[in-house]
Length: 159
Image (cartoon, rainbow, N blue to C red; front, side):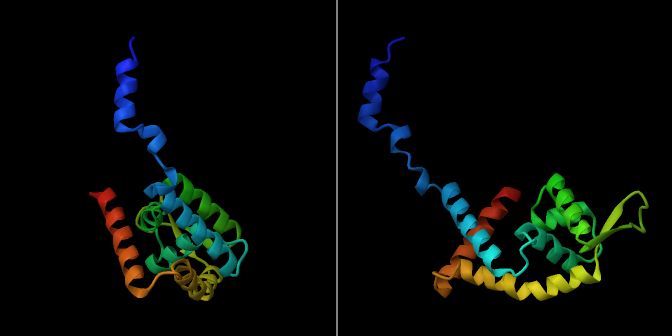
């Protein structure tokens, strides 16, 4: 196969592979912002055993009340297999319990324990501070814009 024409075409138009800067790509920037957010979470939240996804599940459980694992997964954008593991770890810490669903005895409902409820209530102000610290370098208009654009990106996936 003759690659001479391909080589000439790449020289004229630039080489997409060598011109591609991963550090300027949306996925890379989102990942770095998320890594920063997770570091701030770990430093701020006050419970070294609590991860951000565990807090998300606990917080959603408080907001939703007794819920199925599926509903908690949807509310937190966590896949079913991962949410099951998170719930098991939270159950081991006695922050949640599984009860029989009264509407369908084959299903379980995830319920916060009193200890879990206290943890969410005590930790929520720190979680709000994590969001503030994550966007600390942004002014009020930029914060609104970032949240608007992230919501718009998330809505695009459900379309």
